[in-house]
Image 1 (cartoon, rainbow, N blue to C red):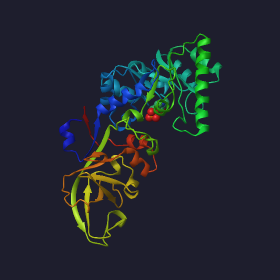
Image 2: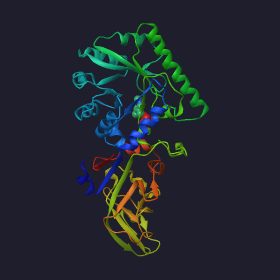
Image 3: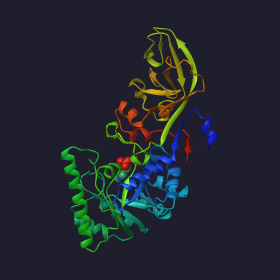
Image 4: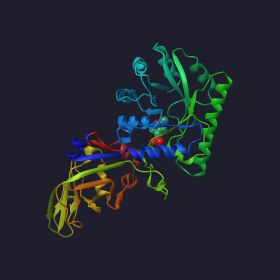
Length: 377
Ligand SMILES: *Cc1c(COP(=O)(O)O)cnc(C)c1O
């Protein structure tokens, strides 16, 4: 999306690519010397725009990317991404020819998926998923028989082996112990493969919280998603130091202003009730842009002229009311910040997610395509 289109948009995202590069370098510094960053750009790079983010990171030297599905992988190739693209999720075997055509590396979700991909009769590059305890995708790491049978399938070139940690974001003793169980199962399976003459290829197990919370791992890749965008999943995970820099800001505009007298209601359900004479700004963003509808009645705030102002009443599909009584100089056309900085004030994605009882991963990945993205270097 070009600057001109953004500058006249009713609501838009701003993505600071320099912040993404900073986060990539910071995460790379936390990994073992042999380990390289695999940038997870699924779900349109968590709402940051997968193509531009991946292309930019590729210019910065990042060599591997991960997506959720075939269409996301094809989209990256169409936008000129040349590095390794790993599809983390299931792809139907009927799509094997597309995988090969676009040079995508497919995850083998289990033995049956491996058989079906093999039977498609198209040579494919794949990474073997191992289930070490999350019980989502992967062959059970202890099942060496199934691993060996899958590795023997024709048409599949195994260039990597990976697993996923499910409690690496937690410091509870039982979770730390379970993460160690997952690591032991993973490296145990990798060692058994190697001992059986099956090259495990590039191994990887950490996602963002695995990079943040674990010591160096003897892996080829580490898959960073949310942290790459400078954001923690939860507010309580944010350290005092600002090692990571949030890349995304979400902004909209004031469309109109009106003053309602004390006692008057406003919006659907008249859910807002003015305590005193109240100046309301109508701003041009709503739940159809991907914001959680509940935010407006969960204490949601915006920044106008560097001042926090409360949302008022129920969020609409395309609009939102804000109480600007405290900022009487507000004018139509003023920029309104929902996530990001304005002057000395800041609203973090972690804060918004917490109000809505969710994690930033969900909040950001739902930001809709009605919000053009302006990139700044
Ligand atoms: C989404 C995903 C990641 C990235 O997770 P973050 O917590 O956002 O870093 C890594 N690996 C797998 C398998 C995933 O599904």
